[in-house]
Every structure is written in C-alpha cells, then in structure tokens.
Image 1 (cartoon, helix red, strand yellow):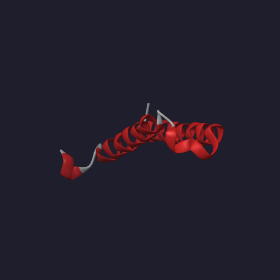
Image 2 (image 1 turned 180 degrees about the vertical axis):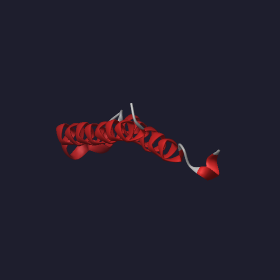
Image 3 (image 1 turned 90 degrees about the horizontal axis):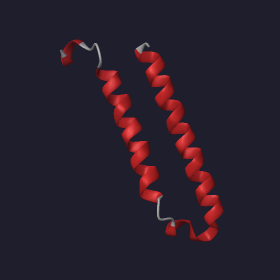
Amino acid sequence: MTKDKVAEIIKKRIKETKEEYAQQKERCGERWYDMYDIGWYEGKIRAYNEALGVIGMLDKENNK
C-alpha cells in the first residue's frame, strides 16, 4: 500500500467521523452540548489528523 493510499483512507475516515458526529448532534437537537461522547469524536478526528501529519513526514530528507 502506498503512502497516498493510506492518506486517502485516513481522510475518508475523518470525513465519516465528522458525518457521524453531525448526525449525533442532529439527534440531540438543542441539547447537543450534553452529548457524552463529544470528546470521543473530537479525539478521534485529532488522532486521524496527527496520523496524516506523520505520513506526510515519511521519506522527507530532513526527517531521516
């Protein structure tokens, strides 16, 4: 699997997580801030973004 394919998969997962988060917010209505798992979604998205950053460092001359 290539670096670009891995990055594409992670970006797809970020998009899916954001969509799932939006659906959860919609289900909760005006009380979306009471969602117990709001931090879970944000943490998951942050982890995916950090993984993209690490992938971007692969094969860079200054990171060897």
